[in-house]
Image (tube, rainbow, N blue to C red):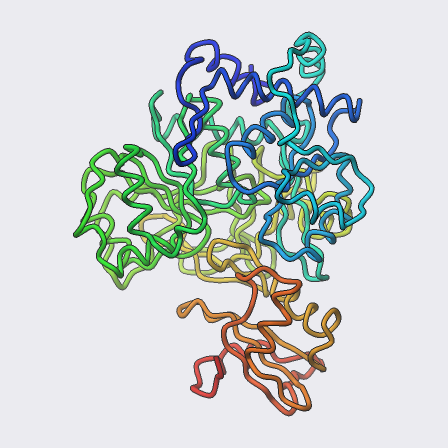
Length: 512
């Protein structure tokens, strides 16, 4: 019985201590070295704070040091929360004020940014840690022994409508369950090499750490700055003999559109997962034709249910003009598709996808109101307490009995793999920056464009919008289309008519 993800890691280190665990360019670290450095840093963490199950933030680029940090936090029986160093400082401040981590780990290059925040937490500069020091392992193991599988493992921040992201709390048990079930389905070997492209603030990265611990997989860290040069990424995949990818489709679409497989082969790539947004079938079929030896799977799931809750192994031909199914539920996960009356849909109907099971997150950190609104009593069960998560995603069944994604019920979107609450962008424009009187942000799913409708006098240029928003919002949340209206349309309830504006994005009057 596993009650902590490190139970996997201890076995792996014992079996393959000299095997390469992480590759970062020309740098390498073995499983034995990773474990030793994690122990040293964990000892330092405990010296700063004697309690368990406290958030510890990591403000380091995606490097070997970030992996060491996350492993050390887990080793210290605390909760890691990775922060994106490219995120505007004000957003980082908001996250830290909400989560209130006891300790923050950073490096010399980013120490100044964190110090200027003047927040109330201990700061550890990983560049100053003496990793050659010896430490007493007994207190660490005793601390881990006191943990149970429902203790928190990590916090992953997702967009929030009030301008402050929500911190989703995920526990060891849900990751253990997902790791075990995934291995039953996909039969991962002991020599998987992972092409890690997702930012360390993604749940995909957290699962890659699970594969490292559970299967002894090697993680190849792909530099963020190569996203604009996908051919270079493919060369690294070939050079390092990468066997497994878990990517957001955006870059995969670019690779297909550029016909890059005409120039490079990936004979070692055995398994490709994709999730986070819709993968256009035409571009997917390019991948499938180009890599006939590779198994492809479309996964679905918001972060509130730990990685993904459904999967579809693409084992048949899907025409370019048909959507890829999101498939069937993972074992030990139940999917409820409910209509407006909270009853199961019938064949041919659409409804909201809801989830129950071990995979559910523990809720939002320091945010009981948001937690209570999203994690609710199962309306089909009035006999005892049973929590489900309402995703807000509209789905239906196809003739094969597979689930098909239709769209969003509200203003929560997936864009470039990031989950974005459109209300957060509006809040930033109206309340934080005071740039406009009123704003409505909508999303064009097919074009993958965030569009801003606004009221402002005098008018504001798109360049000025982008410049101002870049000070508080990450790049992926900044709209690409700007449309000024004298007055935003209202519905009968006096609210901004979002449906009308969503239809209006198809009109050719946008300024980009």
